[in-house]
Image (cartoon, rainbow, N blue to C red; front, side, top):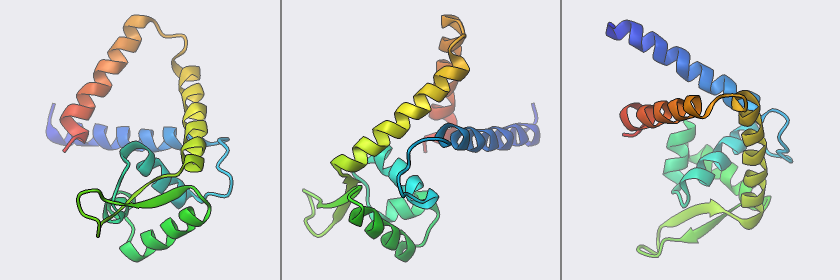
Length: 143
């Protein structure tokens, strides 16, 4: 396969991931969280504790905008800042208990959506999907 064809398949795959993520979160109880704030919460949930700059990088936002949105999440009681144990000057961001409960609920909703799509697949097909995800993660998404 030539690299251009592979690239086009990759773009199609990434687009499908975004569409599926949107479909899986549709109907989840997001309280009064904006899409940008949700993206931040999702990143923090899977990578915590994180720095402000890593959140900005992941969400493709400027540091001032990221800081402003984070402040709103802290005011809503969904995130908290903690001092880094190794460098007390450095602030790390993690979910609060309330934020963790919200994300657990959203991830539970997403799990039920996934089960609706793959629930009838055989154990062999599920294993193939797991292996494909591992391969993509190891060879493409992990840097």
